Image (cartoon, rainbow, N blue to C red; front, side):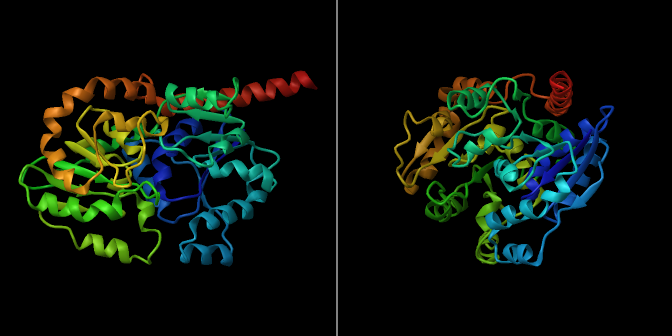
Amino acid sequence: MKIAFIYIAEPYQCYHAASVASALSVIPGCDVTEYYSFPETVQHLARIRKAMHAPAPPLRPLYRSWKTRLLKTAKRLDQERLRVLRENIGELNQYDVVVATEYTAGILKEMGLTRPRLVLLMHGAGDRYVNDDHLVRDFDLALLPGPKVEAYFLQNGIIRPGHYNVVGYPKFDVFEAIRHEEQPLFPNGKPFALYNPHYQRNLTSYSACMRTVLQGFRDQTLYNLVVAPHIKIFHKGFGVKAHLLERQASQDILVDTGSPAMLDMTYTSQAALYIGDVSSQVYEFLAEPRPCIFLNPGKLKWRDDPYFLHWTLGDVVEDPADIMPAVARAQARHALYRPLQEKLFRETFGTPLLGASQRAAQAISDFMKNQVSERRHAA
């Protein structure tokens, strides 16, 4: 059985799929090849395999025409991703299985993918509404992180029995291996808060709150601060936005606009306090329950909205002037939220927490064996 893993976006995808590709490659009869679009992906894959002492399947670049490369240069990454998929249909049609971590890959069949079974290995496990989750229906098999997503997808008719498995979150397996590389981030020994704004324009707190957060932490002595926005915030502007933010770094404020630590749970595992808006990284942070603050400068009507379920796990701040008072009382108020944090974390990722990579690999192998058996019976 020939299996292709495709990484069609930034290297964050590696931390969700690479461990599954390695686990699948050692199952007898499974021949795995990985394809990448972003050149930086190569280094991230190598780092993961080294940390996990895991086999590295053959790695190939996805074909990208000059028109596609031009779209990347212009930071039109959504259009570039679609062109990359279209330009590689012939290559991918040589395989029995194609595994992707992006909903976008669901359109491969419309583009002419005919032979392979299409498998979705979800990345992220947040509550935010995603306008292309309907594409999950186009996958032959969806591998889900936990019962929360399973219930949502079933309720909305996005998945059907026999074509999905709840396997957990492979990224935790990767982190368990990589965490041994951790070094203290600040020499002064103080705990740090993590500010992790999302990129989506109508939901992010980045523009409205960044200045207040930076100045507020300069004016207090309890915490250091790590500013690690979603990497897609920096897609536009030809690096200007990243450069201006990096200039705000100081001895007590670490600004990260693109290092591996943004992707591998370094910050979410070590922070004493999470400040954010709608990023699913808050659920990774809650592997160890800790205080959270959510920023809602747009005054969205979020209560009783399932897409903002995580905002029930900490204080929600609408006025930027109230951010630092919320920071000051966060530890004292954490006891109010901890039981629900623990409950939603279990519902998001299930149990056991580790071993998802092997479960996902076995689910793919078993699914394909069943497909072969069904074809034989049909014949």
